[in-house]
Length: 185
Image 1: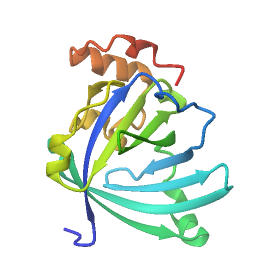
Image 2: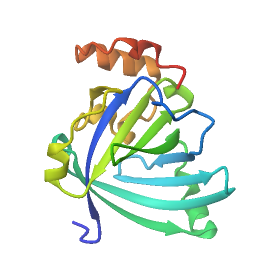
Image 3: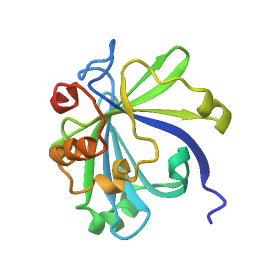
Image 4: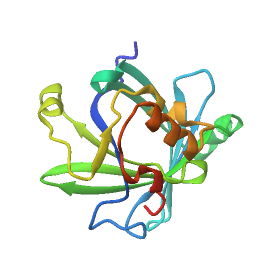
């Protein structure tokens, strides 16, 4: 186990669209996640459209207890030259826009997926410890919690389409109401 990996306590929810006051045109980051096949590694390219900056990161996610929302994440920043050595692994990409907002003193990260996953929108909350995570009450805009569902892990979404998301939600028997219409994030 990599002892430099930091623990992540989180909960993940499906949402219909960005909650107010957020809008798709608001401040966000663009994430390009390339998953290296048959590994726990991904290359993350982060673009800040407002600052016109790029950040390149190599990440490894170690799932400690997926059902409990506990994983460890190790990451290393890469410069342009280092990143270019990994470009051969591109092709298993998921693109999304990430928005941040605080509701009731709790910070949320909202992901609006692009490309073939257009229509999938999630809200993630990170916590400092298990106690905070357990005490958290889901917000009204959360349709359904998918923390711990391996189907909704980033590497599992590679190659999927939004119809696959709908099928998985139907298989789980979740009454999400407008999930089938999640296209106007």
